Image 1: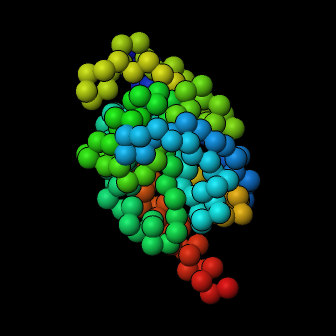
Image 2: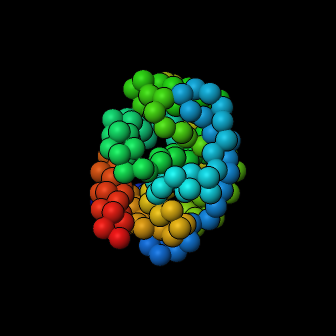
Length: 199
């Protein structure tokens, strides 16, 4: 019984890190990164994207893993609604650009509809005060390929065109599912659009 209890406590400590990400009202750190759209390598610049409207910057652990697959699929299904309010979606993970080329083009996930960026050294995540850690030894993705890059906690930032964070959504702190990151981010950009349309 004590062994079970200890195991449960250890799991809780491992899966629920202390949450210290940037908050609403903070300035989102600018970044440029190697990225992929529809299987083709490109460069993403947050500064350039913000010139067009709000940006949803979502950090996720790894391409081709359960929750991340669902989240990418849900973003792709709702892409037109984000487009309607002028919002850009950018996914950020520790995946290599080669993995992201496959992920971004896969019709089951990103489906070529939005860009995903490589943060292979975790520097972008760190600038947003997010935790990254090494993947467990032998971890494999849903294709059976070994995951050997850093994993970042699932967190979504909605950034206004002025660079200020409108909302921070965390699986760890808010106890929300990967799909809820999408629906809640969409609510935030719709509210932003509605408020700014009146001004």
